[in-house]
Amino acid sequence: MEEQVLGCFGQRAQAGSGVREREQPVKEDVCRVGAREHGNQGRALPKVVTPVAKQAAVQVMTTCHGLSKAKACRIVGLSRTALYRPKVNWLERDKGVIDAINATLAKRPRWGFWKIFDRMRLDGHPFNHKRVHRVYCEMKLNMKRRTKKRVITRPRQPLDCPKEINETWSLDFMRDTLYDGRPFRTLNVIDEGNREGLRIEVGTSISATRVVRVMNELIEFYGKPEAIRLDNGPELTSEFFTDWAKEHSIELRFIQPGKPNQNAFIERFNKSFRDEVLDAHLFNTLSEAQEAAEIWLEDYNEYRPHESLGRLPPAIFKPRVCKPETSTSRL
Image (tube, rainbow, N blue to C red; front, top):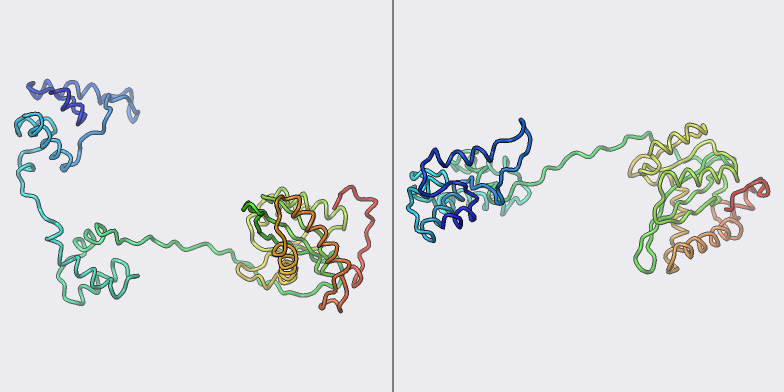
């Protein structure tokens, strides 16, 4: 019987022994090797520490194992006063507070604790704030605290049209999914001087390292831009990318958060690419998406008329002087 009682509640006290005889095994168990070090206390189950748990343990010992209430209280460390104290029906006792809170929330469901308490006081309820807060938390009404988000401050970028090529490039990301549901991204790069699409890079993950690699290939083929217009994505604001731009003396013109109109040239390019490629085709693999993007990009630069360019393709509106035979990149 003793082993069953000890197995249920993790107590090492021995029934029928004195208080001092019961203290020694417990003292040996809780002793540790050093201060603040975790040792093996020999307990397979958690201790019975709360009064409610101790009362339940006493109930099991007296009803199932035939121990007296005095002995059971000594084993679990519960005073008999707490055992015999009449239980309080908190639901009935706090009924007035609950009704007052529910009446206020029925009209104002988004109010927090202090607004509810102030309204209750104005309505003449005598409950103090500690009691109201206890009932408020027991009803699981405490709302999640909204922290203020840190917003990046950027100067406004005027959208002026460059007069020459390689003055300003624009970068942006797009997202779509394959036929089986796998997501992929595209990195789009254009030259604002003649609206020419320079690159559409397709991949499941395009990190800052890959962005730098693509930009190095474009610079090797087309030459270096004076500035790049871009948003505040994590790949573009990373230290790796900004250090690369500083090393190549390229100005980064970050647009203001939530202001995509400050990067309107690449946004218009993205709309055409989504309407004519991404929304018009289903892709099974990334290679299919990359091939479709390259075919469309050639058509966009050499055959598709642009109203903003006098109804001319970018390659005819402002031809680019480059020497592909000197490049080792396959774009």
